[in-house]
Length: 85
Ligand SMILES: [Zn+2]
Image 1 (tube, rainbow, N blue to C red):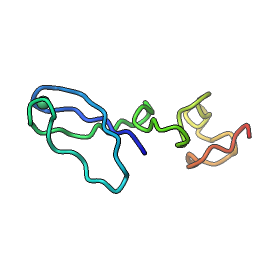
Image 2: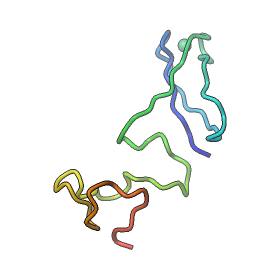
Image 3: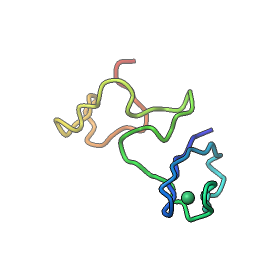
Image 4: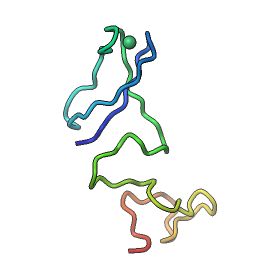
C-alpha cells in the first residue's frame, strides 16, 4: 500500500498515511482538525515507500536529465526501469 504524505495548512503538521490508491485523500489534520493537503512531490521519491513498489528514483539517476534521452534511447521516461537488468 502506498504511503502518502500530508501537510496541514493550519499548523503545518506533517504526517504520513498508508492508503489504498482507491481511498479518498484525507482532509482533516489529526492534530488540529484543519485542512490538510496531500503533498505531491515530483522527484524526491519519498511518497511511494512501500516495498515492492517501483521506485523511479532508486539508484543512479537516469541519463534523461542530462542528455535528453534515457539509457534505452527513449525521449521520455519509462514507467519501468529497463536499464541494467
Ligand atoms: Zn493541523
